[in-house]
Every structure is written in structure tokens, then in C-alpha cells.
Length: 358
Image (cartoon, rainbow, N blue to C red):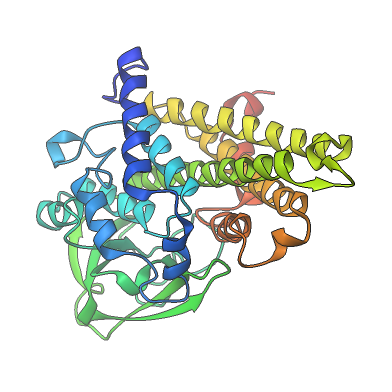
């Protein structure tokens, strides 16, 4: 069992306050998102620092380690609002790094990260769409969102049958970036030549369990961000269907469009149920197969819903000037992050105890 309190009326009120705080800080103006596209680092470093000051990066980190000490239900609510705002700040990546630093007992860098004074991201994969640790200790690692703005990179490595944790500073690595569909970028990190047993500074031993748990948390938070993006795109679409006229009628009165909108709403409802169930399971210390169900569901639904929303807008939905397309492009980037639908469906089958007993 985790140390997180059970879901009560007080906790529901706390989650509501987190949502309100996020909406207040992030706003609903997509002009900010558009301004940051195709720039480096691709996010607002001042806003990320404010997120740290607000306690968001350490939301699910124990109070004893300097965090807020809340659970995944709160983190999921926050990530959902991040997705709703289409915010490019690498909050989920920073939260993963905070989890690993807390597990390694690296208090100084953790405090800097939680305060928003350092941007610490984690590089663990050398292949797309995987949760597996890169086999090479010193080879390039890729697919790091927001890497151009990182002050430090965490570098898990296999050592003597265990996973150790190293940290690299900017002068110990080379970062190259590749543009993504939403106007952001993914970074590839290459350690510079070094002496010793691994790149950078060794800060922790035997963090394998923490890495697995951290990747589960990040996958679930990403599913929640996809959910928030779906809901935002769907809300825009409903407004359009209620106001746009064609052939002398509001287009939302046409049955074919109503059916398409109903299908999208059903996908959103199913995703919310899966995400909330997985958050409750993690808070209770249950096995993580629920996370894979949620991420698989969210990854598939996000593309179905966002594409439907663009189509329901007609020709205007395909223009870059219209905001609904921003959510579709963002979904295209988030869907493979921390494992896509196919990977998590396989993982769900492998981890589900009821299926093993069948």
C-alpha cells in the first residue's frame, strides 16, 4: 500500500483546486502555444519554473523528500489540464526525473528541480515506442522531449545486474534535436568522452524498481494529457456544431454529425474511466497492468477523437490557423511517448493476473 490517503470528499476538493490552479496558470489562449512552436527550447522556462514553485513537479513526491506528498489521482488531474492547454512544458519528464532522484537520495539536485531552478530530464531509450532501458552505457539515447532546455540529464545504466543512476551536466553531453509534428522537438543525447564506469556522475545504485514505477507514472500522466487534449478538441467541436449553419440549419442538427460526435464522446468517457481506475490502482500499490490499459486506450482514442474533431469542422479544421488541429498534432507526439497502444496492449496481457489464470 502507498502512503496516499483514500479518495474522500476532501481529496476530491483538493483535486478540484489543483485543476483550478492549473487553468489559472496555463490559461486558455493558444497564442502562447503557437508562439513557442518551432523555437528552442520549445517551452517557456519561466512558466516551468512557476510550475516548480507551485509544487507541480513534486506533486507525487513524498514530503520527506521535499515534495507535496500527493498521489497519482492529483497528478493525473494536473496532467489532464496540461493536455487541455496543449502546454509544451516538459512537466511529465521533470516529474519522472524527480521520482528517480528521490529514489537515489540525490537531495541537492532534487531540491533544485522541485523549485524549478534546474530542468532535469531522463534519457533511457535508444529505440522508439519502448519502455526498455537502452543496452549501451555510453551510446546515444533519443526521444527526450524538451531536451534542448535541459540543464541536466539522468542516465540510468545497467551495472553488475542492477540499474544504477548517473547524471550528466550540459558540458558532459551533446544534444541534437529533431522537429515533431506539433512544432516541438525530441532530443538525442550523446555523452562526451569520459573516464570511469559510466558517463557523468554516479548518484544512485539499484534504482530498477524506481525506474519501472516512474515510467508507469509517466505513461499514465501522458494518458491523462491525451485525455485533456481530447476534451478540449471536443469542446471546440461542439461549439462549432452548435453555431455553424449550412443549408439554412445548424449543422449539429444533422444526424450523421451527431453520431460522429457521440462516438467521440464515448471514446472520451471510456478513456477517463481507464485513466482514473489506473490512478487509483497506483495509489493503492496495485500491479501496473491498469496503467497499460489506460495508455493503450488513451493512445487509440486520442487519434480517433482528434481526427473526428478536425473532420467535423470541415475544411477549416485542416488549416493551421484553427486551434483544433493543434490538439491533433499534439496527440501525434504524445501517443508513442512512454509506449503506444500496441506496446501497452501486449504489456497488459503479460501483466494481467486474471488472464494468466484463465
